[in-house]
Image 1 (tube, each protein chain N blue to C red):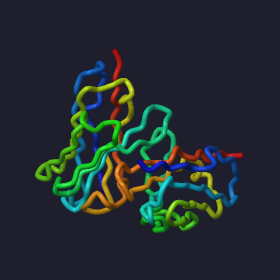
Image 2: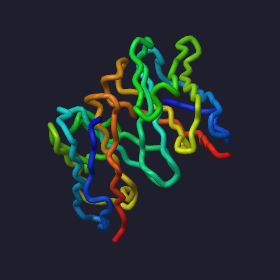
Image 3: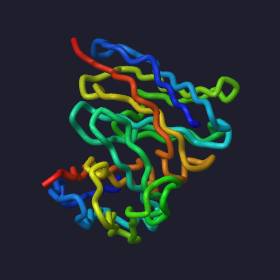
Image 4: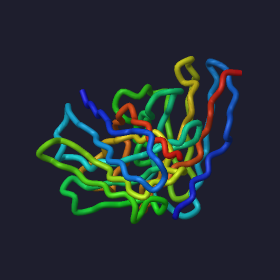
Length: 122
Length: 107
């Protein structure tokens, strides 16, 4: 079975940094693109970022471009999201998701983790 | 960015009803559209990809169609487990935007 386990969520002050991790198992990690999707409490879904299987293609939402960096370590079956210059509006549950194919051209949510909460507040 | 608009935002229905949710894109997304179901406190799950392809394991009472800018998700006979929030998402062009969601409630 596909398993995606996020970690790294925390309460942080505006302007600080945080790194999220997602440990993947139950599938061939290098066969799939990976994505981050977030959801502010009580709100809808927002796609944040995606990375192709070989990291050649990385994509970002306008709201995080220049502040967030997605990366993956295929040797460790892990996905990461480095979040810098955090803002109050970045407060959300962050979900790791497996794409539908190796490139970022497929649907981004074939499987999802349980989410990790990032709270940005002074 | 491509804007995705779902209608209605809330839908009240009864077990056994047939319901349809609509998703409209601000510009063409071809058939690069997915539908997700989300229950309270849980992660979303994939129902449909490429506009009309049913994800493995999803009940056949779910169907979807459309192309270009207008898409639909239909549940042929609502079951108690289907009351949830549904989202469409386009993946034709980054950023891969979601609709605002449609909450399906029990009447």
